[in-house]
Length: 78
Image (cartoon, rainbow, N blue to C red):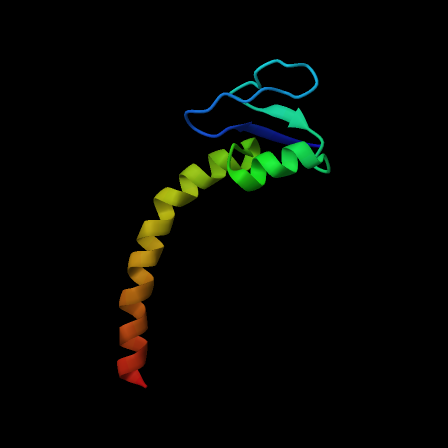
């Protein structure tokens, strides 16, 4: 089982219950083809990873900025 939530700005229904899935997260079978396709298409995002992605996305630009500046230094040192 995994937890998914709707992508920002979307409302997604559970295909069996016809209820909108909770924006905080909804337990689904990770092997279910319906949910696999929703994840692949970007209609839903993993709820557990979404919080981690938001915090790491704030850190990623800083690491990306430092990585290019580090690469030219390493190239010029060689």
